[in-house]
Length: 479
Ligand SMILES: [Fe+2]
Image (cartoon, rainbow, N blue to C red; front, side, top):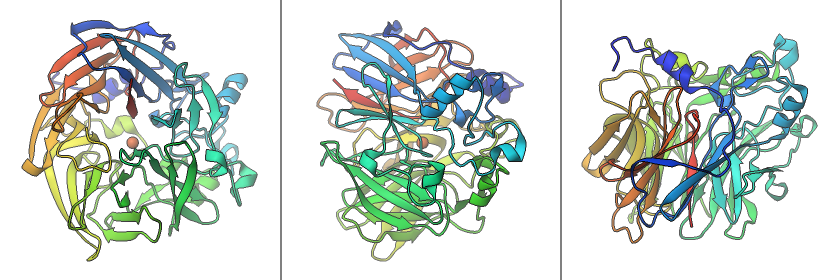
């Protein structure tokens, strides 16, 4: 590590626009060999362009969604990539300038140019999920976009057969319902479960399910006291699990154009988060008070035979300063964005939870190799190596919560993306799997890594022809 490490410069180097889209281009294997049996497609999404004409977005989360598909067959792999061509992107490209507000970027022109403009640019950049023959690019502030699973061409916004169509006061503004970027597959029923927030005069959390045949329906709708920032969910055989932080969006602040959403987020410092167990059969959520702190991501959740529920989350001490990512990652950061894998064991009858930090390693983007709703024994995540106080997640870690053990591998100054686990054929335990990730080198071509999930040792490393900015989420679709 350089003695005068400038993380802000590194972060800026990572946030460079993608040069060009990829057209089924073979990736050169530069180490090891692709394992036999790894056959299918790895889809990943993330912000890939941070500029519109001469304007640079103020926030990396506003970057245009760039979906990469890496196809594995016969010991080789190739990559195709496409930007998600949203309606807002079409209009802005035709106009040659920025027309829409984003999560962290205002329209140029001050208050007047932003007030009452509540249709935001759908960045379509957070996740990409395949279900019932349909591939969707997801962004939690709006509707999903359907993509052609092979060409990645954008087919258009998907309102789930009308379930997400604008309604009430939002109709005049053309603001659709939202569909979060973190749906969960149920490996037993073949369903895809998700939630979204509806807002306008009141606000609510809506639970959706898309069955194995692709038909979507609303399972439940629960009103919220105020609009909150809920990013992820987990799924057990009985519940949809939500970790609702003590955070509110000041809708008036956004409505009157004073700030972008990222600066309208406020934490209620004295309150902890609330764990919601929403019965999959419908009915009122069971709300359980949790520890103080903030969580973007849940690793997973499962039911215990005695009726309790285990839920693991990447818990940060408080709401990090999301408005300026580079500064948050800079040398003055107080570590507020460093999370720890935390296990909540919930008794839904007594409405109590036992909370325990199960690893001291700072993590984000937790994942499991076992599909919902089955119990798992291991969690993988991107991580900050012990001793570093800035949230620059240059490591991957495997954590075994029951034994409070971990295996860590660092890639500094490269950044690994979210780990995606692919169980080996006939796998007998969680770590009998391959870990797929992209490795993002600041200012240089990205790489694809296939690691042994148990040891994190390299099985294969392949090079992309282009640099790809650090992405958000993705998924694996077996051949
Ligand atoms: Fe996420």
